[in-house]
Image (cartoon, rainbow, N blue to C red; front, side, top):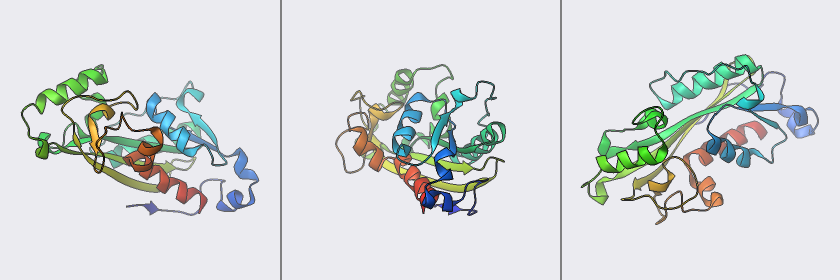
Amino acid sequence: MDRPLVIRVGRFTFDDVRAGENALSQQLLIATGNAGKLRELRTLLRDLPLELLSLTDFPNIRSVEETGSTFAGNASLKASGYARQARVLTLADDSGLVVDALGGRPGVHSARYLRPDATYPERIASLLAELAGVADRHRTARFICAMRLASSDGEIVFATEKNCEGFIASAPRGGQGFGYDPVFVPDGFDETFAELSAEVKNRISHRGLALAAVREFLVS
């Protein structure tokens, strides 16, 4: 569900967008340290009249701990925490893979599954080992993405959460994307996320759908 909470974001109003004036200098911090995620978000936001920043533009910024028990909780923590430090409009998300046969794991621990320093090939190998012998019809899964937009003072001004349903393939396939993309097959497709073009993935993915809602909030 998308939840617009206010109609003004700090010093940024929607009249600025329509006028095409002050909006050109408006900054938006994309609060993620994940290079693949940052690349996707930059691509999907590139045509908006915003100066897109990343955490690397703030070398002294302190990392915000993801202590929430839900994707929504972590997204809110990051959006508010980084906005208060950077003092700019901030977009943050928390996303992950939920596998039904594993009781919802890896879930909110997707980026730290197995161990914090594990590579994604290692995480995928562990995931597939846990699913060994599980029939295809029981390998259902979904990617979930919660996004939060915070004003420069840390107030959450927009919230959305989107899912992409699918199942876990028996082996990794494809060289595109990142994370668990090589083993996730979205409903309606035979290819994994890592086999689909970026254009198709961005149109159907959990993150693409969530960001579409954020875009609509910013410009409508």
